[in-house]
Length: 209
Image (cartoon, helix red, strand yellow):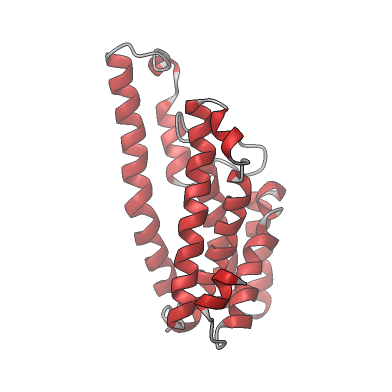
């Protein structure tokens, strides 16, 4: 189990990062007045999420999911329990907007929904030169990166020898350089976990410096 104080601290960081991402995207709908109140830290917050993800994945792999099967089963349940309803909701809301002839939704029939939803279901939106955007769900790109990092981590953590090298190389070729470019950030989370996993964390010290 994670140190209790460390777990609380990670939750605090996650909440702050979530608020920063929300504010970043709210600016697009409510005008530039938000930027006058605070800088746009949206991309920085996404970096924090990547590092947190690496941290948590390293933790569960070492303490809970002791096999490749358990690892992918847990990831499958956690990811698709959110992604599938999200894709359905995006499509449904766009359809409602089109039916009521709302501004911004009149191009519903012009969108290749079968293609977009199929690509998104398998998180292929960002591989190589792909840049398949889901209407009104721009942040979806990050989960596509995340899933690729889960697979890369699983190959390294659960396989050995020549098999590990071959599978890692093949998957890197499949996903392309664009996704690999941010992989070191995600790996930082696994390094941070190794450093702090057995270290006590004083929340008062963290908050007041």
